[in-house]
Image (cartoon, rainbow, N blue to C red; front, side, top):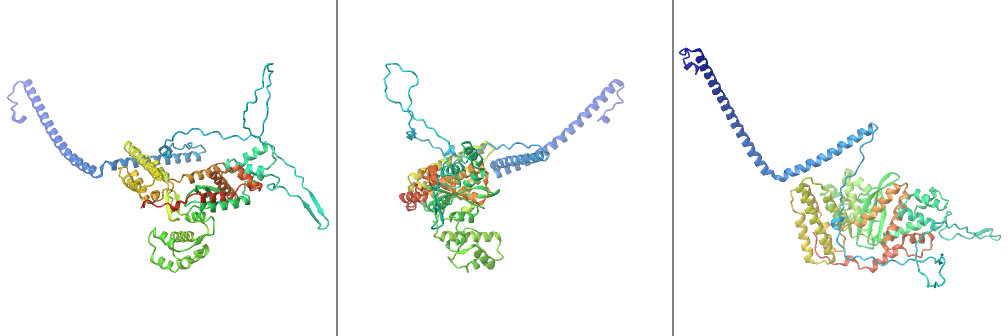
Length: 593
């Protein structure tokens, strides 16, 4: 614009300078406006791009939904916690390599118990009348202080005080000895039954009672005996803790009678070390007995060994074996053809079965060989008649229990623990988990009420309620997965609808297994096969005696002294089994399938 203005016509220099300055300022303003216009156009274009991206994001959010993002947060939090724990482990390892101490291992305060949810209010529980105390001796006491002249005797005030004496009862037996020249033999009187090795039945009973009922260590037993004046070595105490033959025979009788005492059996396992090597203690439990058996493993064959009371393994292909094989993937054609040549219903021992596999199926992999072995072992167990075959096992969801018996009932409390182990981060997911747990335990109490009064209408309602609870979708992925797994176990969880006498939980076996855990905490583990056999034997006898209401101390003293005045525990089991109504005669109410 400057060229359009004729500056030469302005004579005054100051005026011309002002006009030039104004024109230059105007030019700058016009240039700034052009820059702003360009920037505005750029912003408009960017806004258009952002608008398109916003639309795309909204479409994506609509597609995946909010639950997906919440579950991503949960997975992210879980992964972060795992990485933190792994990082801390690495730091501790570095500290140990430097000769320092790592962070102390503090277990998280996570409560997986469902006792609070399962507890029901009980009615008036007044204290039972105090049991009468047996009087061992009576001692009359006189008044020590001087009495007034007019004091009259009014009888005695009886005060019963309980006390105990720990003292030795060392006996010197004078055994008569004779010699007969006619026979050239010496004759000597025998010690009373139960006295052997320089120690009497009372002391040996105390050692066994403290070792297996109170779970006292050998060192503490030795300390107690020495403190009351018994001269005994630690090795002698270790020998006393081994099971005498008489107790081993009673243990075998208990197991056989226990298997026949109930149509259902609880089963659980816990680890036990034998000479430093980890093995498995299987706990078989029913209302009238409990049995402990330790084996090297806890696979399906080991469980079958327990159910058959340690009888030699046998393998038989029959309908039971084929039913087990039908549960899994279809067998290859060449395997089916080879199995068709096996004699049906004929027992094979272990070496013979392995030889047959090596001859007819040499290329079979280890997993398939194990599967065929499990099937044949199950077939032999279900067909044998030496020991009672269990109708129903009440267990947790471990895979080695599947297919062993005709029926399988799963533990509801164990199933509930899986939900307690969920640790959601978001408040919404925490509220969803609480709601599902409340419904879970309400349903559990409904099943308990059904057991008291089983009716077809109630069974139908409970089956429908199971569908409603465990097929719902909460949007919390981990919880939905857990619900789906529970639903997949519907048949085994609802066996109580067909058989109301079945327990809803496996607590008896788990509580019995806890006795082995307490023994393991004190003694760490047995040092020899004879030692672990003693653990199994004594814990079986003591646990069964407690179930039958038999005084354990009196029972052990009776067996070790050889008096045998108390009836065998196996006889008590059989007597009480005969007195009870067989549960298997109860008619089914509704199929739980």
